[in-house]
Amino acid sequence: MTSRATPANECDLAVVGGGILGLAVAREAIGRAPGLSVAVMEKESEVGFHQTGHNSGVVHAGIYYRPGSLKARLCVVGARELYEYCASRDIAAERCGKVIVAASPRELPGLDELERRGRANGVPGLRRLSPEELREVEPHVRGAGALHSPATGVVDFPAVARAFARDVEAAGGTVATGCEVAQASLAAGRLRLRHTLGETCARGAVFCAGVHADRLAVSLGAPRDPRIVPFRGAWLRLRPERRHLVRSLVYPVPDPELPFLGVHLTRHPHGEVLIGPTALLAPGREAYRLRDVSPRDVAATLLWPGTWRMTRRFWRTGATELRHAASYRALVADAARYVPDLRPEDVLPGPSGVRAQALARDGRLVDDFVVSETERALHVRNAPSPAATAALAIARLIVDRASSVTGLPL
Image 1: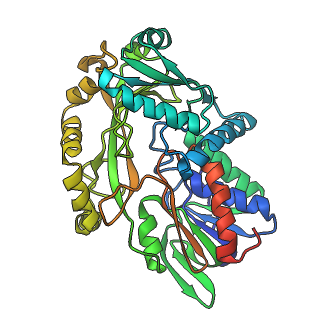
Image 2: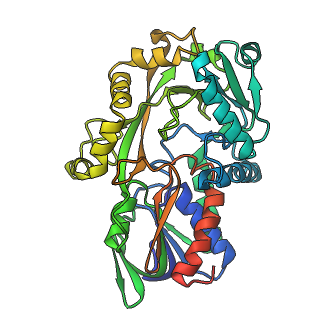
Image 3: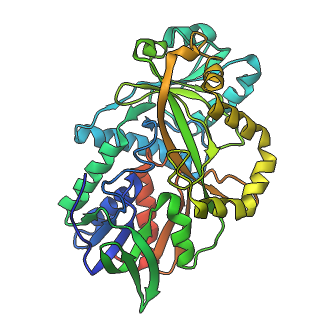
């Protein structure tokens, strides 16, 4: 979706960022208060371009997340609502299912913990599989045991974002693309947003700015902690004649200390099977290619104390990720632990994405959603996976808080 709309000089609520979450927030706000003037400002020429458009398209069921966390509370509800929304808009969403595989007996305790979390979170249809049952579900996958989640699926998230944008516009809101917010300040009880299409004064604002979220938050007085540190993930693609190796989505048991899920195989909504991703510190907040180096972003990452504390803690993991990035054979070998028929010659280069990961000063990779407040504004500081899955549910939470922070009748 592209739009020639220009935000008005004044509006009630400005939403900065036209990804799936920003659009869900705008849609929720205008749905609650139909007379509210809402303006979404997206710097790219289309909505849903960055993290929304550069992910594997997985609709998560809610297995991984610590019971009681925002992720756990919102993912199960959000997935159900997303499927219902897609059905109402004729957006293809396939519940293809997923297996999480313990490649060896030593990974079974980790699988036990995932099963405990999934059941505590109310994940529908979750069941434990023996090695024999695993082969029935996924004939080419091997392991000491597995969890099967039939509610996990895939969807075209950019298509969902475009549908959200149409909902906003149909309700009288504005969605302006090519509208980068360069500066935000507070004056006379209003937020002044200077952008590439002019200037807008808003009674309140919600910032869903992804990799740039921390900078805009700090400019309005929010704490510097946590800092956004970009991680670049690259995938490989299975050759079409080898896509039969997986029927659904196949994941390993992840490291519980990291917010990444390990090397997995996922069926993309458009038919491709992706293997990956890698997870390396990126040379820029929009570095989809390694040569897209931003000196400013590199300096921000290196000067943040949390970067060095994280590196000291996870240097072994970092070495593994470097090996995966340097050699597609190493990445394939990792996936072949549970898909033994997989060979290096089965893959082709695939897409890449950049994850906006919040990193605390103490070196902790922030794993849950984080929203901070400044005068008349909310800032989504960390919205990693499953934010796209849970967008409708997260939007309700954000709009609830925005009502008290901005004073708007939401």
